[in-house]
Each structure stands twice: as structure tokens, then as C-alpha cells.
Length: 315
Image (cartoon, rainbow, N blue to C red; front, side, top):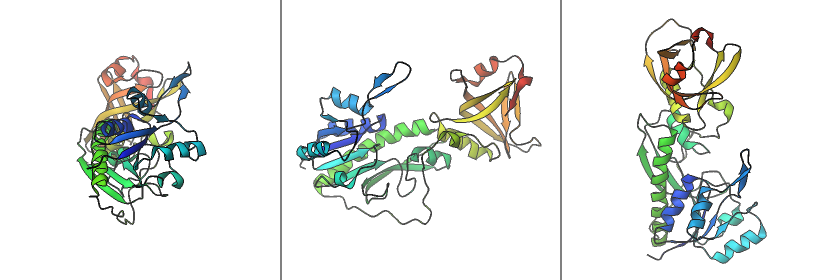
């Protein structure tokens, strides 16, 4: 097998793991493209992407273009004479870029395409109660997540998984699949296949703040899966009235019980040793929470912070 020359595109930790896997393989990373450094926080500290930090630690050439159509940037990439571009958790690419290498440009997506196209496939696989998901490599075209499939690998979603644990599993699975895809392209042993046509594919649209509020009028299992699928980020929340103040409460984990009851859906039952919210078919008990303005804590510490539980109501 002749090693391939690779330009890697990515930004977060999920992408860094794939970059490391390629760098440790037989293939040669000739360039790394990532987001520009950004100032954030009170001190406006300059933050570098995990991909950039790793690339520089390995003395790999790094490119941080503001615009992907920049002529100088395109010329620099062309001069690298890469065989293939690999994209993991990066922004949309123009045709002039993804058609540049001889073998094309492929992307790693954290779902079993065509299901869960979009920005949040890991979250929605859990929110929708799936018992499996996986990773897909596919050739990029001008439609989002719709290119021809190269390879796929599936993984079981366990009852105890949340978006964070599943993210970490798929990060490793995906890195292995990226290297396997490069090997297959180098050996000309992969037959790309169009994505199956599905009348109503499951979507994984970008999650905004307003999408993370818990709807207590759903059934208990749906609520539980919603909280798992949002944990630890962006995190599901509800709103409490505490005396004269209204505060949001993030819920990272909990458990539910199915039982018949006569309580109104969304009713809060709270005391020093009890915190439950009634659903249409039972109740949910938060186990790890974060009250607005406070740190993340277990529910026992949260309850110990109150003396008068009569002043706490659901908003």
C-alpha cells in the first residue's frame, strides 16, 4: 500500500483524535486546516483549537484562513500536492476546495447516514431513544451530509450513555474508521455507494438554547432520553420560582418511575429528601443539577442548600 498525502480539516477534540490517528498511521499529514484563534472570557484570552494545539506539537503545517476561497490559501494547498482531504467537524467547503485532491475529499459524520444529517447527530440519537448509532465516512458534495458513502461502523447505545459518553466512544470509533477509509482509498478497495433514499430521514438540526427546555407534559421515558441526549452539553433545563426570583435549573442526569397518579403534569414535589417532577405517566427525579449562578452538584447537596421548600415552585 502506497501511503497517501493528507490535508486534514477540523477544529474540536472530536477531530483532534482523528488527526492523531492519521499521523500515527502509514499516511502522511502534509497540512492541517483549522479555525482562526479566538479571544474569549473576561480576560479575552486567545484560545487555540485542539486540532491546532496537536498539529503544532507534532510540527505539522497549520493553516487558519478566514475565508476558504482565499486565493493565496488555495494556492498554498494546491502546492501541497495532497492525494486526499479529510474533514472532521469543520465548516462547509466550497467546490473549488473539495474537488482539489485527486482522490477527493471525505468527511467523518457521527451517525449512520442517511439518518441524523446535521449538526447534532449524537444528541438526537439518544433523544430519540435509538439503541444503536455509528460513524460514516462519505465523499463531500455541495449538499450537507448527502455524499456517497465509503465506510460505516455501528455502535450500541447503552442505557447509561449520555451525549458525552457516546461522543467519546464515537470519537475513537470515528478515528479508526478514518484510517480504515484512507487505507481503502490507497488500495483502491472501497466501492462508494449512494446514500439510501429515505422518505423521512431522521434529522439532527443545530440545537439552540430554546430547544433545551424540558417539556414535562411528555412521557417519562422521552423526558429521560431528552435529558440524557442534552447532557453534559448543551444541557436540558427547567425553570423554578424560588421566592420572588425565577431561576433556571440545568438537569444533567436523573431517573424516572412509571406509576399512575392524580397530580397535574409538571407538579413539583420537593423536600429535604425528595425532589420529583410529575410527568404524564409517572415522575422524574433529578440526580445531578446546576442552579443558575451555582456550580454543578448532586441533588442531595442541592436540597441541603434550602431551608424553606414551600417557596420553591415550578415556573
